[in-house]
Image (cartoon, rainbow, N blue to C red):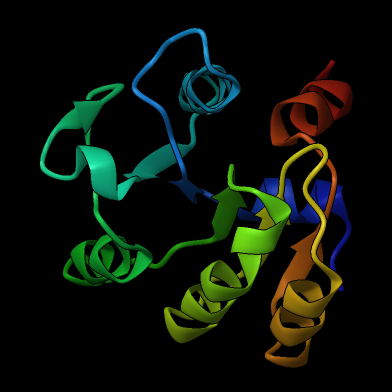
Length: 140
């Protein structure tokens, strides 16, 4: 299992599941921060599929986002989850299916069953941590 520092330094592409189009929402603020720090974000939100958030096309599913990347020979490095803890197991299964590198559950999001599933499939797992806070603390 890689450390958070290793995960963040090794990763370039982050699918953000549950990304809101509302600038005041945490998911939007985190996604904008990640973009400003050189990460490519892939918004995943079925309610906004076909639209754009932060200049990126929104995908209905993780599979659609992964397929769009695969066309360029790329993959999803981190699946960053802004969903309720109870909603994480299907996201974990999708992350495994698309061969993502890491399942990341934001602050206050924990699902041990999903974490165990993802780890068993070889994914790194981070629970109950904000990716923006972690990045900022590592990079000053």
